Length: 275
Image (cartoon, rainbow, N blue to C red):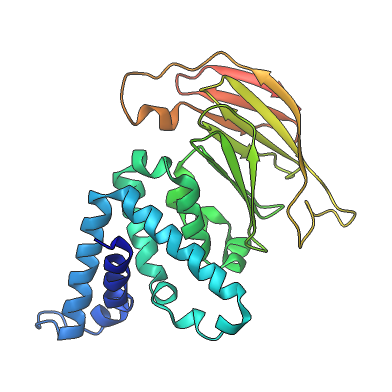
């Protein structure tokens, strides 16, 4: 079965679901377009919750394909009318459902999920309102961090890498700094440092972001230059009890100043570090 064809077909049917269903008068039968939109929306939700990895990876591939087409000047006139472009609201709706109901599946593909979110939400809107207001569900993960000062998003991956997104340009840079899944990431308040922690390899690392003369973090049109300036070994945090969801909330990083951070374990134990 061509999963992509199935999902894109359903997205085509429910791309205008909000408009179709909003025009229906309460108590009256649905008109054919509205009925099709509602059925497609329901089917999309069922498929996504039945096979979260298939849904996430397929939509992420379509996003990458769409972005590649958008980079081609000959395709510029068509990219805003594609099914993917028109169905952004529906895609975000399903991602929101998956985060709420199946966070364990989402965290395994967190970078792909962020690729989808970055496509569906305008960068200018994230820059203006922040990630927490634009899509609060994704901020529940300790592996996701947003910096208001530099307008960058950090996402920890299961492979031990961190994806760093520039909201202004849409570009993404990967940092390879840990030997196991990332447990938590967090930017310093001034955006000059990024802290990353992996409970699997029992290390916390601090990365320095380069600063331009104008005071913004990094260069506007290029990926920021990062360098690891400090790494500390930390005793591993033990889960409260065996379970697939416990690793999602093992520990988080809390900055108390521009150079001081606390690694807060789920049981309340703290480890303090200074950059």
